[in-house]
Image 1 (cartoon, one colour):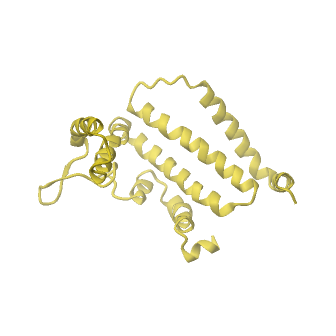
Image 2 (cartoon, rainbow, N blue to C red; image 1 turned 180 degrees about the horizontal axis):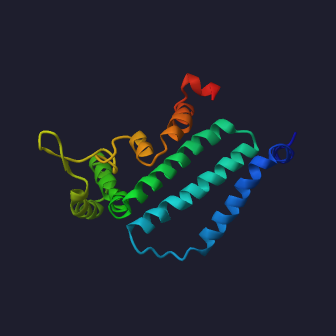
Length: 195
């Protein structure tokens, strides 16, 4: 059976599953085409980064399912769940959390530059250092001994793990029944073959 015939067969067999996805895809596509590029705050800017990635992930899942590549779709579905939780978690305190989400870029760039000494041009290093210095106070926090620490992730110390985020937004069940098993697929755990 040729791929196009196989897609038609799968779509016909599971059309009740695909139809809602296609309608949502059309809605997202029209929203993206009408976007004018303006953001009025960090929250809007965060959504501008998150939404296109979610849209592409959603479309990739649909396309992979059309050709029965379910394990590959599961890996991307895990990413999509992660985006959902991050978005909902940011929305609980949009001003502060969205700013941290956006400004973490300079922390990540600084760390990358530190690990890549001699590779990043000096002009870029100066810009990275200046921006890192401007944003690092958003992330620094005192540990139990009173020493100032920089977290490993942008959402810490408010949340220490992705599970903490799931719990705070009321999606603990989705973590246990969806995200955790999908993580097994992502990391090739033996149990992933039974999902």
